[in-house]
Image (cartoon, rainbow, N blue to C red):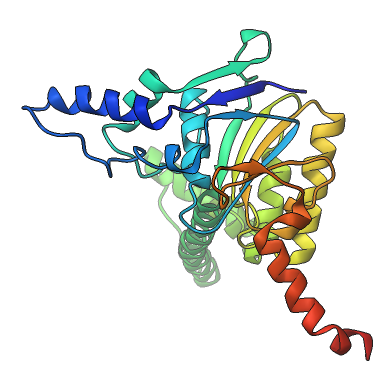
Amino acid sequence: MIYLKSYTLPDLGEEEDWAERYWSRKAGGNPHPHEYPYGIFPYKGLRRIEFSEVTVFCGGNGSGKSTLLNLIAESLNLPRITPFNTSPFFHEYIERMCKWETAGNRGAAPGSAVYTSDDVFYGLIDRRVENFETEDRRREAQEVYRQEKAAMMSGAGPVYRTLEDYDKLVKRLEVRHKTMSKYVTAHAGSLTTPDSNGQYALRFFREHFRDDCLFLLDEPENSLSPKYQTEVANLILEYARFFGCQFVISTHSPFFLSMKGALIYDLDSVPVVTRAWWELENMRMYYTLFRDNRAKFENE
């Protein structure tokens, strides 16, 4: 299902005219041609973007893929997990100069979001930190258990006169009727099964995709092996075809670029144009690599 139909960026004249008025209000300052995101897309001849169920922005480092996703995400007020680098100019740039059209003039459904490779990375770090903290709590709980067991073996026990004494009695009875493993888990929790970066990334997308939503994905291939890239690409196509979702993706990955039916914008070309995946420069580089080494694969 199409939620986002089009997005229109300013041309060079509009940028320069508005930037001059913007900076003239700043104590007579001059337009700053490097103020983000000024001066990126007009020089690429990129003006209006049309969207399909799966739209892909492809280009080298610095081509503007992430900036374009950030403009769209902020225009639609899509929630995000990790903040991105911006400037005081950014949101006024959107408000004054960018235009967009949604199907039936409606916003994206609840659950729509922008997800970046940073979200996956920091989620993995948070998971590891949580495990470290859980390990500390479990060691503390193990020590309490050992102390209570030792006190029971020695026959020593608290004198039960106050509520605090009652708490000690409850703890003593719990230790008496539980193994150390059950006691520690009850008081300190369990460790999360450690995942590789790729396993966590795959699970991240499986858990965050929802029906009937718009998702913006910034380089989802990071941390994913070719096998897992294929699985996420298939997941994206499944949600687009059968569960009413729309995806806008920035990527270098051949596994995402070659998704059947994807509309691809080549941000390396000037002007920016749509291309078939096998016409892209970075895909031709993959082709050249394997063509030049064809005998190595065929002789095995």
